[in-house]
Length: 338
Image (tube, rainbow, N blue to C red; front, top):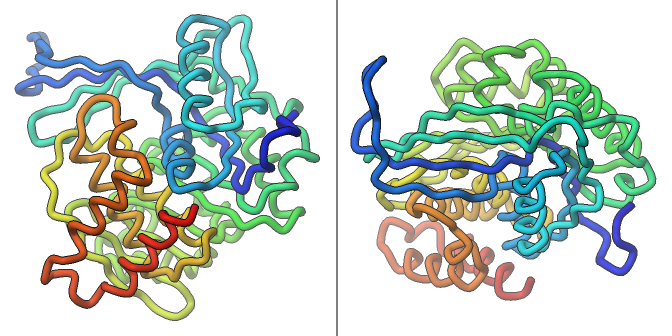
């Protein structure tokens, strides 16, 4: 049960909780050869864990549903989540399977290749998700990776059903692996999703087009009420019932893109829950994604409200953002108040 002494969560999330082993290598090796790392980091990972931590940075109370092993890695990731202000009382513990592990290889251009063992995540038990706790939140965010295998898939469906019965808003980050393996499952969920957060590659696989506006139109026709489309170095495009608009990217050099999309998700969701317009929320999403992509190793120093506000104030004065001054001011005010 959720800690009754803590504030009720504004957001409940469901997905994978992992320990990431991140190796930076000078070049990706050919098959059968070696790739020796010049830097190695261990840090909390999993799409939904990354998003939860970044939402907490924005002042949002978050609880996470997942499953970890009873092992040293499980102890560490739970400690890291709690240190980031996340309610972990809904996290399940597995006596038989280890905590999820991801091995992530990052090349000098900041791109990453991932190898993983999902471990205890797959065994997230729908019967252990208490309806009374979920229905007290305002928003439910789902990672698409939870749809890959049951019983975690069943847990995701149960949590989404509870959220809808309770009148909560919902969001979904599909994940490339899930789109490749479970495209129809993703499409079937879109009518139940208020905010869909795909990358352009994921959107192309779901719609058959790489044109951002056309992809958004199709995804909304398939049922998503709003789409925040991640365009990488080109920023993002948001589509709602009122039309589409693009948000430029921030000009930072990518050093490790792991988790950048998750941070973008957090910014858009947090902004909307805090009353920002779609333009301001998308601006916050782009800023958080850029900061994460530009940082190697543990990101706790860049993912603080003070650091984000400082970054936004620096960027606000640039001529390229002349048409975005009201949005910058709204985001900075939100972060300074929360």
